[in-house]
Structure formats: C-alpha cells, structure tokens
Length: 418
Ligand code: SF4
Ligand code: SF4
Ligand code: SF4
Ligand code: FES
Image 1 (spheres, rainbow, N blue to C red):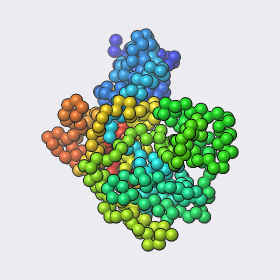
Image 2: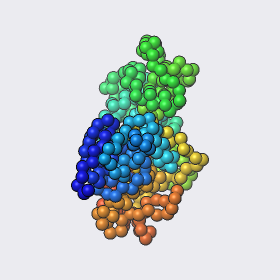
Image 3: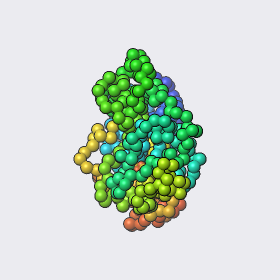
Image 4: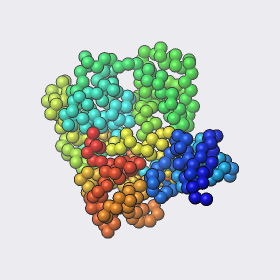
C-alpha cells in the first residue's frame, strides 16, 4: 500500500495526503491552525504537551494531531467545544508547574501598561531614542498632565531587596511640552472588546458593555482610568469597586504566568548582573534624573519580565485558549532558577515544559554532548549528560535550541537584553 493517497475531511473540508501523513500534516495542508508545543518538524513525535488535540467525529475521541496518522475516510474537527476545553486544560497543566513572570510586576500595575522593564533597559544603555518611543507608545500619566500615584513603584520587586526602582526616568526622557496630554482613557476601552471578553472569563463575572454604560463613560470627564481592570468592572458592570489605578486589562489578560512574592533564596538569582547600589537620589529633584543618574538607577532593575515574552508559544496559546494558571495550582511552587553557564544562552528551568525539542535538536545535529532528560516524574528536567555544563552540552546548536524552544526556558542572552 506504500504510496497510497489518504482522503480525510477536516472541519468539513476534504484533503488528500500521502500515506504516513499525520492529521497535523493534513490540517496544515488545508491551512488550518492546530496549536503545537512539542512538535518538531521531521522528527519523531514526542506527544507530551497534548495541546494539538483534535476530535475524531466517528468515535468522538480526542486525538493528538501531531502523532495520529491520517486514515482513509477519517473526519476530524479542530473547532469543537470539546477540543477547545481539552487544549485549555492541557495548557493549564503546563502552566501549573510553570515558574516565571511573563511581564514585570511594575508593567502590570501601570494603568496604561507601560513596558517599564524594557524602558529601563533602554535607559540603562543610554538609548534615549528607544526609551522615548516606548514612552510615546503608552503615554503614561506620569509624563502627561495627569497625576499618577506610581503603582509601579509600590509593586516593584526591588522593594523586596532594598528600595523600588525609581520611575523618575520618565520625566527625564520625556518632555511634557512634547508629549500631548493623554487621550481619554475611555478611548482605550472602545478597543478592548476582546480583552474584556477574556477578562470576563478570568473574573467569572459578566462584563456587559451596553450602549448606555458606554455613553455614560464617555460623558464622564472624571472617569477613572478605564484601562484599569477594576475600573472596567466598575464602569462596565456598575459594580462598586474602588477605581484606583490597577493592572490594565491588557496586563490582566496577557500575564498568563506569575511568580508572586520572591522566596529569600531567589533574591541572589534575581540580583545577578544587577546594580546593588542604593536608589539614586536626583541632584535636582524638580528636574528629575540627569542622564547619568537615570542610567545608574535603571541598572538597579532586576529584569523581572520574561526574556521571551514577545515570542512564547505557551503564552500566546494560553491567551488564545483563555487558560488559567490557577486552575491546577497546588500549594507551593518550585524556586525560580537561572543557569548562566553558557556565554550566549540563558536557561530558566522553571519555564521548561519538557517538550524535548532541544534534546531532539542536539541528537539530530549530533551535538557532541548535547542535552538529555535527567530525573523522573515531576522532577524530570533538561540537563547535560555526565553532569556537564550547559556550555559543554551546547557547543554547536545553542542558538537553534533557543530559537526552537517554545517558551522562555532557553533564550539568547544578547537578544534578551533589548
Ligand atoms: S516562558 Fe512564556 S509563559 Fe513563561 S513567563 Fe515567559 S512568556 Fe510567560
Ligand atoms: S525590578 Fe525592574 S522589572 Fe522588576 S518590578 Fe522593579 S522596575 Fe519592574
Ligand atoms: S528547554 Fe525549551 S525546548 Fe527544551 S525541553 Fe524545555 S521547553 Fe522544550
Ligand atoms: S502532543 Fe502534539 S504537539 Fe505536543
């Protein structure tokens, strides 16, 4: 039967594939998106993440698309409620053991979701142009005409070590005369239909945006920052919730993995490569930081945000499938770790979903020592055979592994500093 053609139907669309093709191959032939986390093209399926589940309509059973062979006459659905829920649960299982912050606590607390960690890195390398554009994108209240109580500083992780990183840089790099007054926050709410839907899911609360409430919001000159999730709840659902600046809706939805309070043993990990100096006091407090003061203060930031936050399949799918990290949450969590033995690559084991992609790449490319699974069950982790260092294990394909890693577990150090 070698070389036979197999006819299957996916979401009601027929497709012919060669014998030996998988359901995933057939779906991709049709341009149907099936999420995958452990799939590696041209490698033996690993079938560990279960994010690629699809429904076989004849048996109504769920199948992993990446490893199930397409069979003649098969009818598959990728878009049923059962499929959605199964993928959501699979992602929640992965997130339940996951140790990392997608975004820094400061950014999440900012009412306009200003990317403060990235801003601080730009300030730290005196890249004023980038810093300015990050500020311009978000237009935070602290550089406009509005008052801001700096919730970013209240939640700054550095408080747990000594004192918060100062937000005075924003004033240093931005001129009030250049940045126009903030657009009405309510304009933002107009654009948050999808975010609202997801916030509703997370809050298990009905957030109905009626024409009436929308009208009232738009008429209200003193309306709270409607980008705050609590304010949205108040504005939209009419609940009596204090409208203090809280995390933005976007942060609420996009921050799928959160570490929470640091454990004492994690302080040295977070403080590695970070200035241990005390908070910089501006010589001219009214004028904000001078350039050298701003760069010194920025060097105190602990880079709480994930180095692959912009390019993480786990995060993207968790948002798309509305997966909740707390769904399977147990009591404690593993400590946050960073393995820094490699000059170019950073490894954060808490973000590893044990998909085996990096292991298979090192095998396929015949990396001399390579990577392997070490340990068993819950404690299994990626490591280097014979207790070698990461630098010894990844001599040839370090970058390939980091680029293929579907999470922030492996990342290229230099790119991560941007
Ligand atoms: S690896 Fe992905 S899910 Fe995990 S903290 Fe980073 S961005 Fe978030
Ligand atoms: S240490 Fe830096 S990234 Fe972390 S919360 Fe403070 S300002 Fe944000
Ligand atoms: S380090 Fe990345 S690629 Fe390797 S097993 Fe973990 S998640 Fe997968
Ligand atoms: S089980 Fe199919 S991609 Fe992971």
